[in-house]
Length: 116
Picture 1: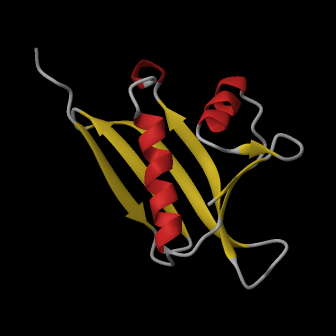
Picture 2 (picture 1 turned 135 degrees about the vertical axis):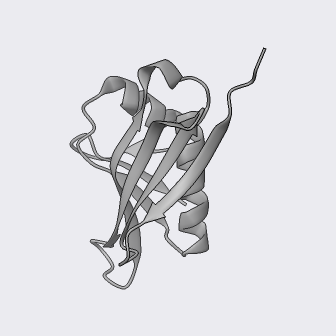
């Protein structure tokens, strides 16, 4: 039995205010997380990450791909002194459950936040 190869790549746009993390299996993209760096609403001196999109192919879920994407984002946030990761407009119940599992808390109007 051949074990599937999972790789993670980072693609950051030139202004470094947005980025995409990609997970691949067998050289095929099976998931990604897209983020934006924004000023903290309450303290304009601080920045925070906003997850614009998070997706893992239905056939590749429950293999740790989503968890690994969030862990990479958490590590990047710590390296850059980012203290909050926010996900807005989360209507998908499966995604809500995943975010709870990953330590995010729901604040208002289907908005989730993870404090590092």
